[in-house]
Length: 210
Image 1 (spheres, rainbow, N blue to C red):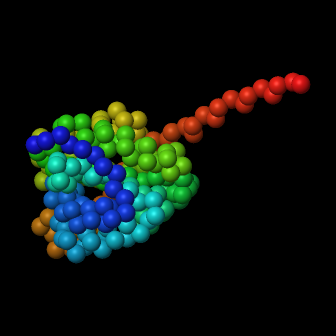
Image 2: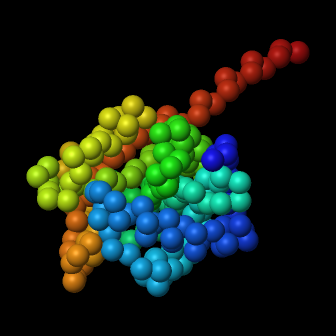
Image 3: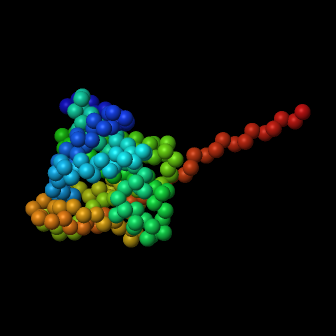
């Protein structure tokens, strides 16, 4: 394995990365806690909607020319209503939030600090786009779920170390088909938020007296 390089993908590079991103989602989301039974046709439809947002962004993680990880985001208002609607019900304006959709990394490349780099890159993208509120979701699974691995590490500590906090009672609900299931079922997803202060304006210069 070589050094992992992060690239913000735009234009033709963005479009070329979509199939690779679809394959990453299928492979990585099979793991706990998603347990997602995905297929390429569904992923292409899902990502085509994501790509329609003019502010959608992919940060690709490359080992040489191979896409081994990715982070994606866009304004919350451009995502499925299953995500924006709970914000409205909680009295929050979804137009104020930039939404981090996923952070993906193949197993051989994990535990190298790439997750923290993804956060840093995406937070800068959000603020450059004029957003000072960032949200993402984590899947809520029962602690005694039969598919939970013995070595599962909760993501909560990682999220908190990066300044994010769960919003009490703010739960999104999104359907997908679990491994081994015949039908989709709805999954609760806890919303986490971090708010940045707007960049301070430089102090006004005193006017000279003539």
